[in-house]
Image (cartoon, rainbow, N blue to C red; front, side, top):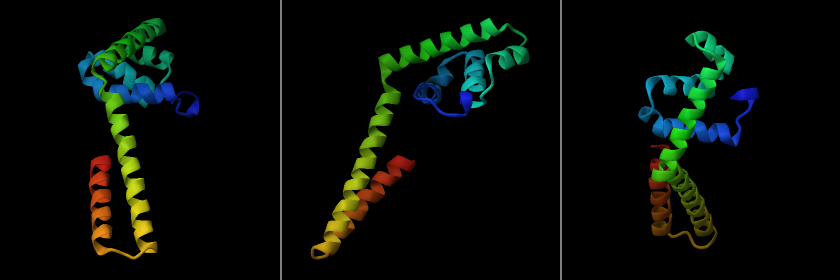
Length: 127
């Protein structure tokens, strides 16, 4: 990302690009990928594409606006993030149940259920 670190804004745009990039024109998608994924400057993109730096900036801003509008209407990226956080919470609680079970009596059924819950959550999180 710009400056060698990932900002929240850059992360958000990369995430939106993953969800909505196919709905943009090829040129818009390419500009965003060059800028956010390949870490090219506006000047570098302009030089590679044979257009002005301002032209690249305008295209990127327009594409960002379109993706933000799509997200405002559809909320797919937000929902995805919320589900991932919830799955991490489920995994954390499953680990706590397993730990508690080990300290207080060791029920095989509780252990099996806890591991099953954790496994299902991990499958959804990693899948």
